[in-house]
Image 1 (cartoon, rainbow, N blue to C red):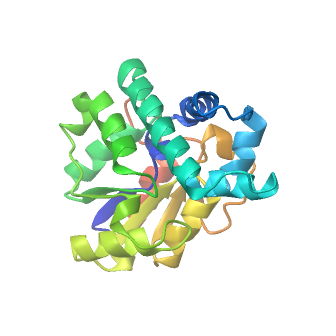
Image 2 (cartoon, helix red, strand yellow; image 1 turned 90 degrees about the horizontal axis):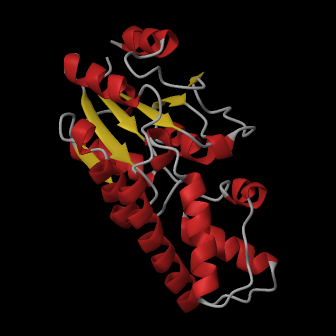
Length: 232
């Protein structure tokens, strides 16, 4: 029986990939690096989960010109720029997120935010939407620094299960990229995939249900509702 629903990525909650892409480019300029990630490049890089991993991947592909210290500097500055923009611009929640959290509360389910990103990114999106997250607070929040390995390793979900004291069969994860869906599946969870704008075309073979959106602004999508109800 389902006892918890875990939202697995920032991109499940809100479309911030374009803000992240532009923030990387701003950070590149600040350190004098002649890189400019266009939308197609960033889409390809999203196959790697985690900003530092993307920077390392592209650095190796361009003769390894970034050392670890430079990668840390760029990533830290990118995070500062992006979080500031999220707080100021308040990008909207994806359709169905608020109703889904309302569903968890109505049915006595625990909820969580289980990501491979750093805590400032999580706090920024939560603080940008206090009208929702103050009303439906998460029972567990896992960030990159809470585990040894990020997604697609299952560590973050294993840690969430430990903190919630639940079995994998009692939990459903919602993910927006294929690599993140793999992480949840490897931990033994059922997976609902709702691909983000930059994840269109990825192979969500590990997901149990793939939907374009979790619902609309007032209710959960019928197929998501049926999937959750079947596990209750």
